[in-house]
Amino acid sequence: MRPVPVPTTLGLGNSQYRDRLLARLMDGVERDRRSGCWMWNRSADTAGNATVFFRNRPRVAHWVAWVLLVGPMPAGARLDRTCHTAACATRRTCRHLRCVNPQHLTIPATN
Image (cartoon, rainbow, N blue to C red; front, top):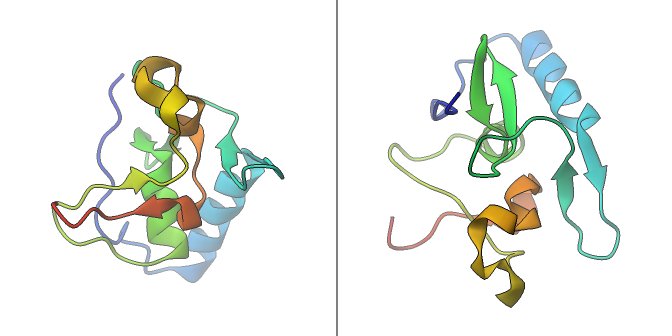
């Protein structure tokens, strides 16, 4: 199943619901002390991107992390990971596709 993009704000008016979603997200994360990556250790889509279920649909986990920990994303924005290395040339085998650390995410200027 292909993940659905996350709405720019997730529609989380209830802070208790937001806190539960954040706790569930962080429960699926293993922090890599060397790289600083927060590696999602649960489900992934066929392209290797980390996915988290939100409102009964798979969502790209790094988008969820951004909205929960940074704030709303501009409409139509995409996120890049700054933790990619030269070894990430083959996207399907790139381990950084599971990184959800918002400090490793950036909105490219050419969005």
